[in-house]
Length: 307
Image (cartoon, rainbow, N blue to C red; front, side, top):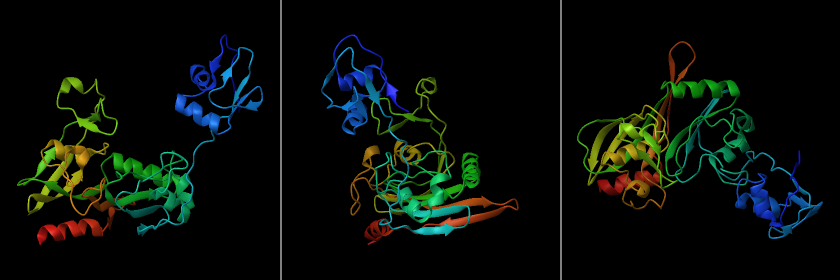
């Protein structure tokens, strides 16, 4: 289907015209449409700065919906597989899914290459059957549904807190006792990259904060750090990272939330790993337990601190 603009009254730059007439959401999107050859003025393609006149007819071909594309070159560490479910061990710094159709490599592009049915299991074309996400800097076990029924079932189980996710994190400071962190979480009002905790109950509705709950247990002290077990009860964006930082224990390497750099981790990688999933299977109370071994980069950090 082609969108056709109505006649205008004054000459305007083509990119501005597309935005002002609702044919593009922003000038950046307008320029992308023009350079991609999807805009025609009186049947001919034009550059973005051309001025369109009152009698010109502007036709815009809509962008086709983005979809996952396979990446056969990216390794895929499969921890578990059956007819309904994959559990993949995601490396640190690898995104879970693309943000655009040409945004690669990601975990789901690698999944699409080996298990193409996963691309159609979920409701979002660029996420496929991805049941939950890990931040780019986090490693560990990721669930991917292989059919729509499994996707719906797993998403419901996750929302009902029936799937236990056990993380390992290395935090700055000495934690001596378990913590239960319950502060609601909202998007940061001034920094799109960050989330923020909301302690003022009067601001919860204004900031559209979501309920968040995280249980933390110290395992052992390592120099000026503490290795901890983390069990999130909800799944808000950046929840574990933000809750720990707000409690005074930022994750090592998580510079976005106040964590100090930690050798040998590169920028963007921090010490947070989804080490174990416990997933209900069937009606008989059976629990599937899947573990993701600690990756070499995090193991090296522990060895250095133990030395």
